[in-house]
Image: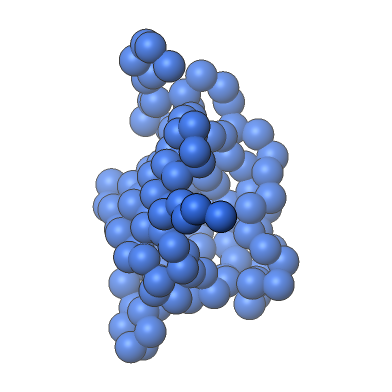
Length: 125
């Protein structure tokens, strides 16, 4: 990519969001994740991904054993429960960072859209 890409306030870049399925069915605790998304950028080795994702209300256990996620909420609301039981709620205009290895309860409370950056450590082998 040799040109600046605009991602508008709705998280739309070069393409409109499309139906997708990134939430593993076995991770869902309640509800149904009706998802839309678009990947705006992926590094050649797949270690960095930038995209927009949207889902209807549901809850799952979420972790990135080898990665870090930074997200900015564009619309809707999500509650994230830390391993110590504390709950943080995020809504439009707020951001969160999920550190490497942490496992959280991720619950979309109102249909939510976010722009995310996911960095995953790549290992040889």
